[in-house]
Amino acid sequence: MLYAMQAIPRTNAFFANRPLRECGALDVVRTLLINPVPYQLWFLRDLYVFAVVAPLVYCLIVYIGLPLLVILGVLWISDIWPSARLDGLFFLLIGSWLALRQPTYRFSDIYVIIFSLCWLLIVTVNTSISVIWGIQCGALLKIAIPVGLMAFWLNTDALRRIVDACRVRAIVPYTFFLYAFHEPWLTASKKLWLKSLGQSSWSVLLAYLLCPIVVMAVGCLVAALLQAHAKRLYLVFTGGR
Image 1 (cartoon, rainbow, N blue to C red):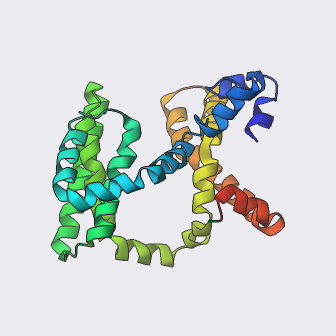
Image 2: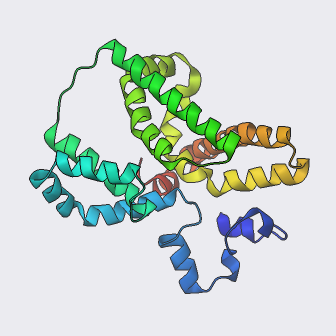
């Protein structure tokens, strides 16, 4: 699909990467398997690597455990971290510790409110700093991730009731397909929007709000058509999910 889109004349402006039609065979393989254009697929590539190092992760969790996670967490938040690509390894270690140790905690309702308010406060402060002073505060952003995860985790029951009560539940089976589908089409749609309507404040805001909805709607339609008429192909695209 990407190759076909890039083959259309005068579409280079909508793709940041070098067109596949201009790449040699080795570059095509590298683009598809090692450095994919849809950046969300980097996550799947990293999963293959993490599967290889899983025995090492197991040993680290069994013999060191929580102290290792605390040390790595401080280094991660402090940006004393070798590469952003290792962020996933840090969260893999956390998940492995939870799976192997299976700790049990009971949180009262007050903790649901505390984590939710803390997350909203951190996100608001970080956004305000970015907008007013143009400064990106990496530490605040990273703190917001685990706090936000806890907030959503503790709100699972309430969120489930909301999902069950509205029609969004109908697209739940397509979530992984949408994850794999949304780029580079989302970036291309925003560039097309801004090229057609200009880059005024309102145009940028509408592109930010509307383009994801359009891409999701198209993705759901494509997923439904594939499931109905080419189910095996759909299973290949989604890895059987």
